[in-house]
Length: 67
Image 1 (tube, rainbow, N blue to C red):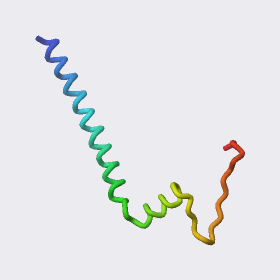
Image 2: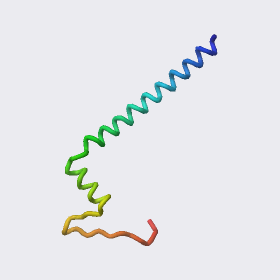
Image 3: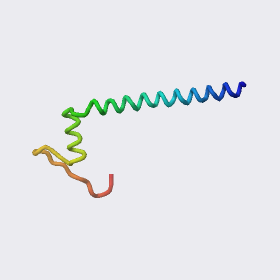
């Protein structure tokens, strides 16, 4: 009987941990969604994914393989 109670407590703790992790993940996803459509988000995506830059800007890619 005591073993069953301890097992259920452990299960409850695991579910609470999963719930907490889900809340944190949901907050992260909501922040990402909230940023969509903002000028900052669009600029970041254009720079990172498309390699865009402003006309007066110059950037270089290090191909040496060293950090």
